[in-house]
Image (tube, rainbow, N blue to C red; front, side, top):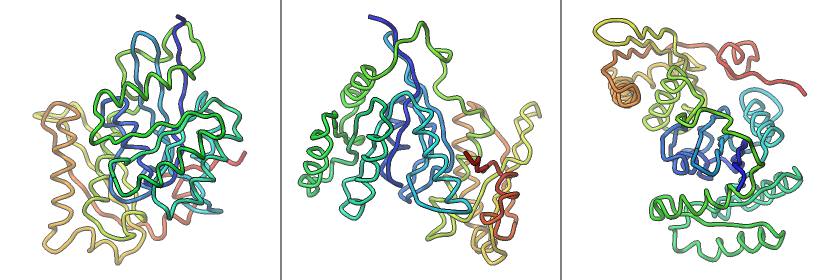
Length: 300
């Protein structure tokens, strides 16, 4: 059989489990995962390679509707992933309140005219069995395969089942598109920023994490006795700064400690990590500031 390789876009609602699914399928943590929706802000590539195929997963932000600011960037990123992928995987939520957006996801991938299949996530919730069947029947009525997965329970067998079915949709390729040893195209600096942002989502409540950005200001990998990394945690209002820092700096210390421990696992060595909370007033409403932080809306 011919070797297969291609780009596969993960398309779904915010918090449908796209990031968890990608990490599960490549068996590595590349994309951040929290209980809050819409934590993915830009496309992130994860790579699975075996003897038969190479799948380059693109974890896109959840599909949202917006005309300006950060949410407009998120929508553009997700729609660009659809247009740039060879194959699409619709990641569908079983939550009833997401019914309209589930229909929109299915319409988007169907109208792309690209090969696709669907996966229903978080299927370990037994009381949602009726909802799983409704979604499964809806997708299969289009002649499209629809699998269901519990990342917590299905383990390697569930992973291999999804991967084997995805491989059949990929185009033929004379060779892998990326080095077979790679599991992501992200560099260490970008991964550090994502790790810090994940810890902010975990330790800060309500809407505050959505109004934050994280930027690695300085990354000195060659310093002795260990690399030194300086990271700015950027908030949009002066009143948010003391909330992020916390009483006696307890919150920012906790974020920093957990981020440092994960970065050390990533780099397989001790690191010095310093977080600095700074204010850039309403940064998420200003295109120039968003551009400086890596959020660029390309008009097409």
